[in-house]
Length: 277
Image 1: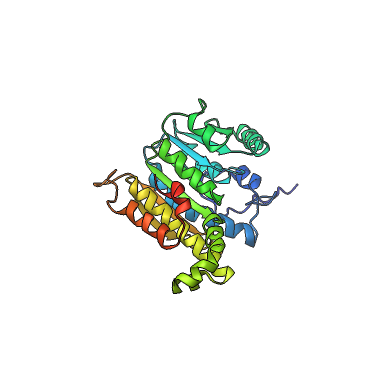
Image 2: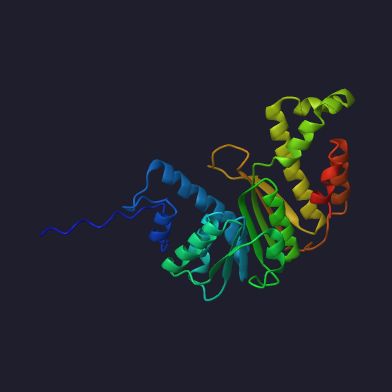
């Protein structure tokens, strides 16, 4: 009787990477194959991992805030933490049903050093289920102000590295929209957000600029780049903030003042508590 041919190795999958996990995440089909869409997703995952991997050196704790289905946390555990003797990943998500599913999946895969918590950002700052210090905090596509919640959590936990891929920033755009008529009579700069699509895009850009200034005011060095190969949208901006290197922990002297000036210029002073502290 002829034996079935073994599956052809997929060059896109790294040596030792869990095929079962990739199936659970719907990156691989149930028969272990890649289609065009899943190949694109896997390429995106590995591209993001290239940015995060250097930050994990010496890290013992990582929290994925606004984890959703914990897609990122599982990938990081599989590619980095699984073969180590130490290191723990925490997934923080408000939706209990997603937390329960993630915990069950971690148990099935034998990912023993993964835990998931159903809690708000306020609860996560004081939860006894989390250590007092977290080395790395990630937030992938945490919608609107959930990215700001992740930043607040990271600062409260003294994170050395913060990795953000913001999503759907609506708060600043809504404030711009509300004051548009007055702004148009006050300054020609209001033409930058007169049209709805420009309001959305400028609001997203301002939000991320203010986040970067907040992090710099807290002593982080910040880099901003684009995730190449991801669909071009407002969801492929990668912000990495780190406290490492010769100037570690030194606040950028004028970051706070520049953030305040931007808020004044665009009449967004009501949002100051979110971006200046």
